[in-house]
Image 1 (spheres, rainbow, N blue to C red):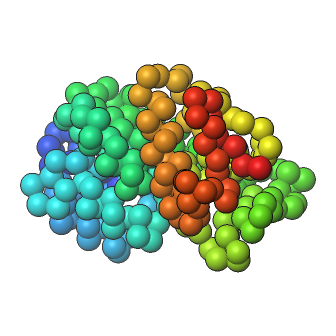
Image 2 (tube, rainbow, N blue to C red):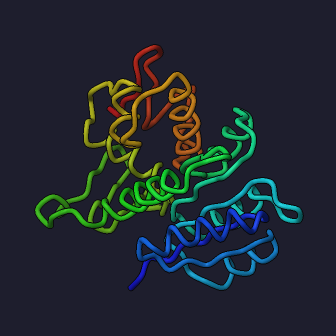
Length: 231
């Protein structure tokens, strides 16, 4: 089955160009030129990835992202004409997986889509011997074979990035994982000055889902100036 991708931008030339590049890579692409058109697609179709422009004339990209995250965990890449840290933090807080600032090269966007899809599928494709048993820590259970997380048997919905962060920390239980190491392992990108904020926002969102109190953490502990650990 072809991988299905939603691309949303009110600038038709950009949307069509991105669509051509993605189709050339073998993806099944749905194009939307307004927020309303995108909303109908999100509610009626299944996707494996979405590329959302923030500045839309009717329903903005953040609202579309909220709708996606209400029921889905597939990766979402945000497009923005403004290199605004506030926009990035809001998007990351709502569950965005990546950000691309306009103007961009279509090949760069295609590469980022591929990277997000690899991350989304990789944790469900490990060898059986690596996924035969779940990780259980103080009421937290991670089933690597099913890519499922529970806390006290309560299901926890995580985005691909949140799951990757939690799994990496759990697999390195008892060791303080430096922020740079965590970023490189999960994002597979070079660590930049802004990367610390990116990790911090995702950790905060993950804690909220786990019901973890940052002041008195049950699971993820922050070792100031160093990184994070699960003990």
